[in-house]
Length: 256
Length: 253
Image (cartoon, rainbow over all chains, first blue to last red; front, side):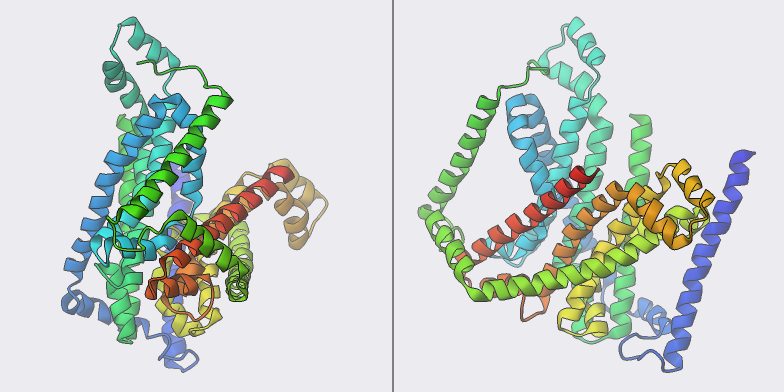
């Protein structure tokens, strides 16, 4: 009853949120049509809506989306292998962990994406540069959360493993890894989000690849409705991506 | 394998750290002189050291640093004030939070640099678009952190304020802000980090001044030692500033 009573105001609030967005869009349309807002700076929302099917067809959005997805997938693969591997290494050798954990944390706070000109010089203007930056931006989170998960394994579980005289590998496979999986997954999710943000950003900056390049292309052609539509599309893709990873994380943490 | 080894001594940790740094420097120098990579991609350490000294001795570096710092500062002030106001509004009212917080939650982590073409159209190619980039970058973490902080304020404090019939502005300055200093400072710290990134990326894309412009200029002229020097100085400044705000936060709470 209480939950149901709480759900109604929440639904009403969400409806107000969506309605407010619609009101803002209609207001902007009216202000542009009346000349208060310059239509050469902000295109009509109706034009932006109309531009979406155009850019999907003419600008090959699906192909660009697939290009960006591939880059994210490669970065994810690298993050899963190298990031989790390095986290396990830091956990396994305590001295290495004590010596390096603060460095990894500092790296997590560093503006790595600003090194993109350096990556351009090393890897060239290619997908490798984009994947490398995505990986570099995401890997500290994966390492830190892997170490955190492994270090947070309850002592009683480790003792149970010892009482069964498990070997080191068995201890890791049967006790430590299952106990650390929820934390590792949180790290992978964070890493993937950082990777995705940086991949789209660098695509835009170096004018190469998928969705990021699309925005740059359209902006350089001064296709205003197309630029705004492409930005909306990228924002929607990002939101869908975050929502999907969030749901996956919840599902995974529940079953782990 | 023993997974619960004792904590190593400070001396051994220090020795390992020094060893790791030394190994990295030796590996770098070996790569620089090996000729495996295209000339200057990995310059010798001495060359990078000289480039750092030259960079720090040049007046134009400080002029560009000033330009970037002012863009970040103004952007942080604008985005910070808006973020603080939005966070207080969301944190103070459950209905408003249910209506709009999901928007912040999902828009927050989108790559802000994609809005740069729009910022150029709205604010021009000068400092205005970079300030706007800094402002929209830092708005989200500050708003989200403030909203969380508002919800964490002890209800007794709020009731005390109301019983004294404090006005909304007095509630904000006397109750809310002092009570949520820690989350606001955390938001500010996160906001500063993303504001630096947003501003500098915008400068690398389209600008004729600022540190981002210097970096992309060094890339265009293939002046690798200068680019390394700029990145080193930039990383030291960004990490140092972040640590400074963190230290202020810890000292005040």
